[in-house]
Length: 439
Image (cartoon, rainbow, N blue to C red; front, side):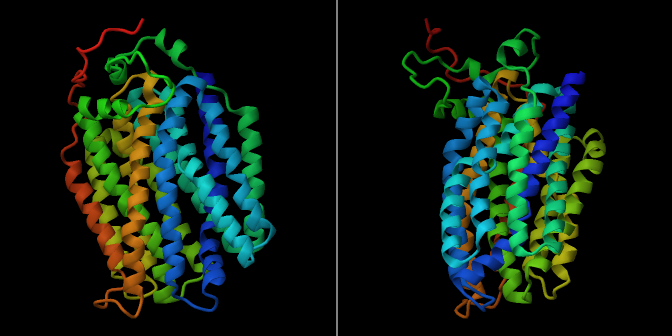
């Protein structure tokens, strides 16, 4: 028990430092992008399209890499695979820490895109698998919420630091923290129990993927197959509906992330400091929600109801952004994050309960891979919408139309969430009776 507690505490510190480094550059990067591409302007379609293309490429890369790393972590260990994204994420920050001129910005964009294709979301995905290794099912949703709360706290601290730092110092501090978290993880984070140790303890959870037909000629056994994903989706209606909800939630969330800051800059002339203020409010609300409210509400309401509550308020949150009529409205909308942030921890907890302990990395990688597919699709929809409705050629006057469409995607996820029932027993793979065991 003490080893488990120590492992979680070091994991939480790793996630905090990594998120601190990643999030503190968000308020500054919009102004740097606008300065490099459209100097002196508050509206720039090129910047919006460039951001959308980056996010689409990152989503494509994550779709391929995320399940691979998740599955490899089941074999080689969570800590080993955590070192990959922690190491690679240092290099793009170093470029802008050195200089933020036009050509260094383009070098940053290229390297950041390539690195994020491998690293985006992988730290959180592997952290979830780590938690699933060491935490009982009955406590898993609460600990997932705490993990997300730690990330929200890092979000607050990172943006608060940016509020009082110059742009140059922001990237220098972010690069330094990225190096520190790599060293800290290497020195202090213990490896959780893996397949062999876990299997000796026994489990009541059915291992869905172990029921899948064995393949005699599978060359890369450590890599997840498409049949593994199909097996998860066909064996558990809970996992299927959770995957659908995850897709629409991430379509909406990435649409918000790719559009909001450009929308606020064009409408209300926000700058780095105002972006930081807004993100701080949102982060504080999320931290309160996940660290204080979620451990109380999960036992009281259950994961299914809390998921629906979170999706409803998230929809209201985005809709309020889209119709913002004054500069104070985005700040009011950010406060609704206190009730809108429950969705993903609940979803990932429900998904983790559908598989055995040997498959946690794989199932979290599959869910995160589906989210990455949404991250690839979303910018292709919302970047053109945002650029069109912020320009002078909009078919009608509704600058926040793209954000309203994101709210509609969340409404679809909200309706779909009513079909999730994690109490339904897991059934056999439809292919279970086919091939015999591999010699």
